Image (cartoon, rainbow, N blue to C red; front, top):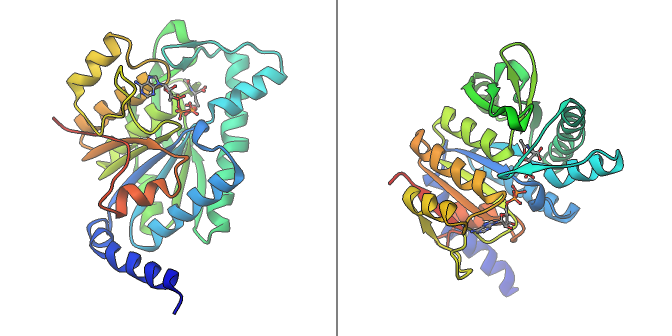
Length: 282
Ligand SMILES: Nc1ncnc2c1ncn2[C@@H]1O[C@H](COP(=O)(O)OP(=O)(O)O)[C@@H](O)[C@H]1O
Ligand SMILES: CC(=O)N[C@@H](CCC(=O)OP(=O)(O)O)C(=O)O
């Protein structure tokens, strides 16, 4: 018999204890815009998500789309400005953000999962009171800070085997639409669901120290120091902050990993190897 088939059967057999460990587990996956490099990467991600559902995991997808928003704002000659990894969002920018996140990125992910045989439904944090926000900081304009998350919709979907795909938007108390950083939205949802894992998929192998080495385990105290001394900067600031808030909010563990690596989610969940930087309650 072809040796490759033997290896495949063996791999499946070795995954059994991991499949058993994660049956009924809730795994919130944040797919960053930079991790959605190509159609092939998207298809592979979608296949991994469909497989997770097939073996009894409840995946909940929260996506970003920063690079796609930048591109559309560029086409419309609207300037992009970021403060500590968050987009300064005026009304014109908010319209474009909502259009790109809900209208393009969200539906692309839903379609990709459906093509792999998964049942996915696209929503935003504005649907069914999922994410209620206050303004985070007047300097950032219409950027929200989640104050209340109502995960009932997500539980109902999970019960029916449906995979929610969530655009990071929030609703203000007066009906305003807020732009949320994708990591922030994923962390708030993971905490509300008391998820077993929060996987933050990005375009680096993990959190790097000043020497450029990936740290496989990190504590909240280490992260605070690395943000203060500038070792962690830009988009990695909300990402690490999210990981800390999530584990302090009841998520078992958060992992920052390279979403462009082949089968990144499967590697992390179903093999001994693991991947990226893990943050546990410390
Ligand atoms: N200490 C660090 N370790 C790893 N990446 C870092 C660090 N500090 C800053 N970064 C930057 O953070 C980026 C990831 O954040 P971001 O671009 O917002 O990703 P995403 O679009 O996936 O949310 C990396 O590409 C890297 O340039
Ligand atoms: C407030 C804020 O910054 N919102 C983000 C939402 C998208 C996002 O988070 O995209 P990535 O995960 O791909 O970076 C933005 O406007 O770019």
